[in-house]
Image 1 (cartoon, rainbow, N blue to C red):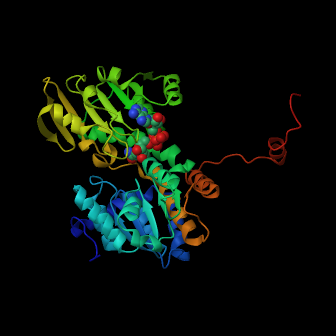
Image 2: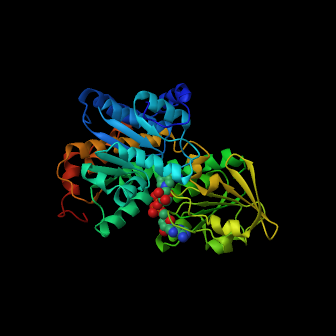
Image 3: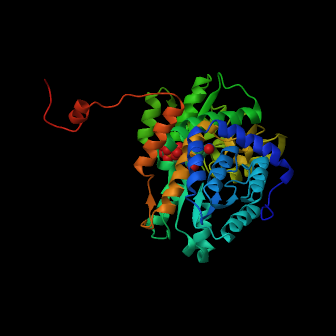
Length: 418
Ligand SMILES: NC(=O)c1ccc[n+]([C@@H]2O[C@H](COP(=O)([O-])OP(=O)(O)OC[C@H]3O[C@@H](n4cnc5c(N)ncnc54)[C@H](O)[C@@H]3O)[C@@H](O)[C@H]2O)c1
């Protein structure tokens, strides 16, 4: 505990209650935690984690501590740390370097503190830990056996490192498990992004033109949930297949320039940079709200916004008003950072149950496996399927089992039209 740097240790009681509440909705991770407590598969390992410090991450860190690991934790976004959870984890014995509202220098100081612990396995959400290791802390690389990556943007960065032969240890792309992206990215981001916007603004979605930029797994979830709340959803895309899919799912598809003139609310979820730029903001209606739910705060061009703005006011937490030279007022939520984590609590525990079950089992896989190369691996299929089965069982859902005849039919080629 004395090795941690957090907001206030006195918040630990509240943090414990939050972690307990999350844990009640994370049955799969609970089962893994029970087994880890018995088997101690992580004894002797130091884990270095750069993850959003939420109540669900609290349950994951408890799981690692139960498994015998020493844990260092920093936040993966300057605005997403839940200070009470950070305090509770510090008290439980993790080395926590995280508080809400960091500047960039403080953020990377925390990343470096985790690396000072000389981790043997890393867990990342956005690849900041991995890139710091490869750029500034090369001396710590030799101690590392492997790592995991939680999100799409991190996996993209790691695959680029792999392509350049710059990656110096194996990573498992947790994001790419079916039991991760089909649920966390889609239903988790879908619900929690709207939750963040509501908490920051308390606006009504019904009847509004809501523009979703990026129709990937997150964008599909946001568009689906916003439509369910009565918004007229418009999608902007750069990928023709995804644009076509959005169109056939019943959404209007157009360019961001066309959408700029009619949108009431804009949500970026692309993982790309400068999706909404100055020339788009200049066309926007008075009162337009902009939020980002992609990993980094680069999707809405804030430099461009400040260039065309004559006055900026904070209206309430996570809601800033920009008065433009043309007299119109635009509203930016959570400084353009992940709105679901900065203005709300991130994904609901039920989906993080599966994402973090993947994290726990992949960390165990790395701990036990000697022969991984310096590559980005997918999550082993048996881990993905095991998590899906356990989740279904926890929801009391039974499914059919293939008969012997069906198994043989599905694996043969002789039988056709009868
Ligand atoms: N908010 C959260 O809690 C959360 C959760 C999971 C993932 N993420 C992040 O959200 C982002 C998207 O993740 P995903 O899994 O949906 O990725 P994805 O690759 O499935 O989808 C991204 C989509 O954005 C599109 N796109 C790229 N540039 C664009 C542009 N300029 N204009 C319009 N569309 C564009 C791509 O064609 C693609 O269809 C990533 O940064 C990811 O790390 C956030």
